[in-house]
Amino acid sequence: MDERTSLRYELISAWCGPAFVITFVIFWLGFGHNLPNPSPALTATELATRYSDNLSQIRLGFIVSMITVCLYMPWTCVLAMQMWRIEGKSPLLASLQFMGGALTVMVVSFSAMYWAVAAFRPERAASDIQTLTDTGWLCIDLQYCCTTLQMVAAALVGLADKRTVPLFPRWVCYLTIWCGISFFPASLTGVMKTGPFAWSGVLSFYFPYFCWLCWFSTASVYMIKEVRRRITAYDGVKSPAGTFASGMSR
Image 1 (cartoon, rainbow, N blue to C red):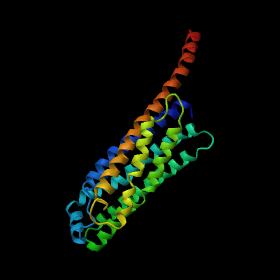
Image 2 (image 1 turned 90 degrees about the vertical axis):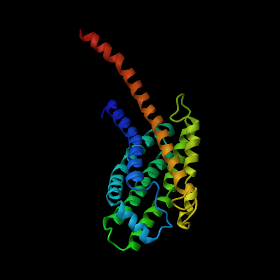
Image 3 (image 1 turned 135 degrees about the horizontal axis):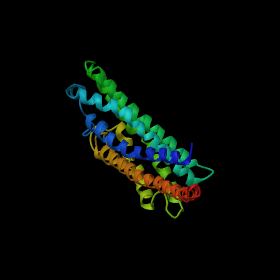
């Protein structure tokens, strides 16, 4: 594969970042009725009624979410490549970021799958629907460390980037670390059913999820810029040769 084609694929992969954010907000949060999300304090009957009242939208939201979450994968791959170029021969942090991103895809996918299963047979016992809902939320909230490690690894490489035009400005690196540790309060979702630390609370849901999407969007902007710089540099190198060859052919 020639370098121009490779760079084109990198650019497409970097644009998967904004595409993921848009589809996540529309389907996982919107159609999936996760904004506001169901409180763990709801009774089994109340939760079952919530599913039956919004059945079509919930099904659409989580089925599409399980498909579009795959946009996170090419984005993670292109970030790993950009980090690899900075790290050089020992891309430990690039590899850690890659693994963290891949596991994040699985965590988000499995949480949506549990909710899709709950909506598949709305006539099932309300207690079963509650169990599936609980499992989905605890799956995504208690396994946040996969994403936190991905973010911290990216930030550390960004801080070590000494190039004239670095991949990320230093403020983006510090923002990344802050957003990564914002998930820590979600550790209490396994025991809290009400308050800010419940999975429907400010500190375990609204704040960390906003931080995650904020980091993802910001990082995507600079990753796209990095690929465009490489495309411009490549075209700049190829253009003089093309002009010379064109002149010789006349």
